[in-house]
Image: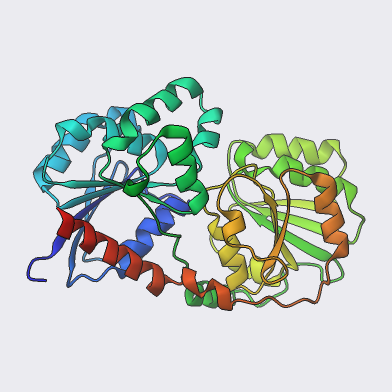
Length: 363
């Protein structure tokens, strides 16, 4: 290839989250002999900034909200004149799909979808409007990357997105890095006389931590749950724990910069999400040799977990079944990881590189 493919990555910020982590991994590992990479941030902030290599050009739009950044996004896309514009996260993707007819005709626009749209839209203040906008404008993207087959099917069946525009590429996980970080803390983090459960995520409705608290109420004193994360529901969850008198069985640890030692030392990771896109935490826990028990709710969770190999699935939001599963498992069971190799960084990066090269040849 004589000329590098210039790619403009656009994300709101690099605050903690699955989409931001994926972008940071792409910028670290994409072959710079083939690709000229630029990162556009609405706000230059977030923990993943430290992972961005020094050779990556970063453009800071200094905008707090997507809707306040329209003119800056248009100006930047036009001035950078990239071969490919790659965006991710819902409202930003939607904005770019609306603007697409007014932007560079020779540029390929790719939207990476970060969640199950039909479910996440129900949580929006204006769900019917969001559904209309997706149906009306999302086909303006030249291509869409879905993290899981479930997400692709959701876009095709519920929003009439052209199937051939959507490619499924799972999220990459740097298993070796996660494993190394999991040993940064050697001291015991848990009372080993307990069956220690760990859960990590944003403290918000989607993640179902309120359901997890109700599950803990049904479990005996052998079980202890630690929740890592921060978010809008912290006070609400704290109150629920106090109301149910579960402070001796549940700890809200707050945000932890390195959650992997907790994952490694726990007996199980528990995923209580009401819906997901493609939950990286499942793969990260497996990288720490910790099995996962998860609700089989909308999203790509069932495309990661293989029963009795790396975890177990329970019917969506069935608290009784979750409790029953916890009581029935062999707690000394080791997990199988061979089938997880398809999620390794080098495998997924190669899929992205081949995809970018392929769409350029079609141009």
